[in-house]
Length: 132
Image 1 (tube, rainbow, N blue to C red):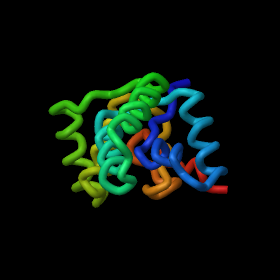
Image 2: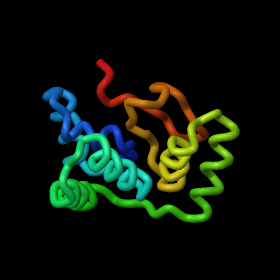
Image 3: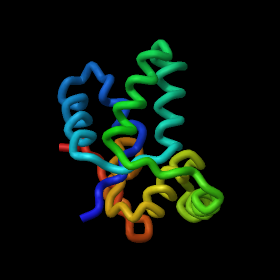
Image 4: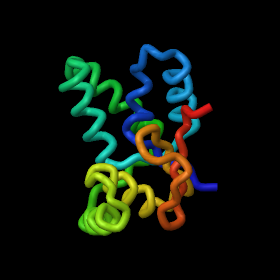
């Protein structure tokens, strides 16, 4: 079975004060998964801008995430797929980039708290891993 694709919010919950969500995020990363460079970009931006983390801590987080997950590159093909998905499903362009990379990776499921849990886009299912 293919590994799940993890959205940036799943990675960011590693830093959460909500112990249950932080533990769930940790378990998901330890099990392995797939992310994209877009996920790394979003995590970096939020860590620096919103969380005001120092670069040294951000780099340590990114290194751990890259060690646990396969990283899909951003390509012209992923960009074109994101444009198509954004138009077809009225997704934000950043969410469309995540969905495009998940589809191109062959992941069966995209784990995300921010997108519509239960939604299916082509062969990809979106699931909220924190929903009880």
